[in-house]
Length: 217
Image 1 (tube, one colour):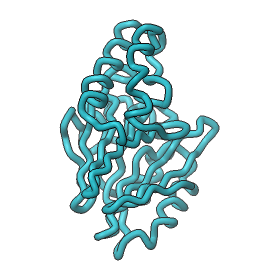
Image 2: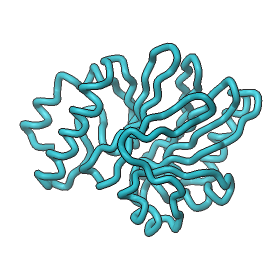
Image 3: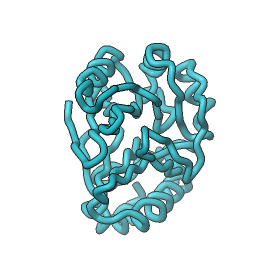
Image 4: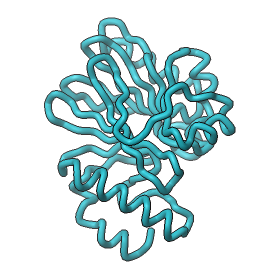
């Protein structure tokens, strides 16, 4: 497990499955309210992640489960976790049917670009990034300290955007959205927490956008 401590929230994460999926737990420390992002697999590990945050706030409570996109490796534990916590669920509107097909879970709140998900008094903004899937959503959090964090799912990684299966139109769509909706909006110190592997920052990746466009992936 890893931990990122900000002024308002603690962000904990665990890597699960043979796909090394990252599961994130955002806790607002003032209240203890929590948002789980990507119930990917290994329900016991996810429950252990939640339990590890028991001292992050006065009354720890999972109040929502968010999914970045419909792919099977990001939703394998979703049904079990939803049954365990019975809280509102969030995902991109265009991916709701795919998530239902892969997991059997009917998402309660379909998100569009600019929608907000509340965790106590902390809000995460939905950033629609079209290309990896039609409804891929990144979740952007701004702490009162000014620090910003983006949970990018499989749309942005260290070294490039997500897989678009050598489809030029999908690649163009994803790179354009990432450029306009992340790199043109967020400062260099914004932390990017992807769906697999290690983190990066907007400033680390910004100089390479032209290279990504030229290489086509």
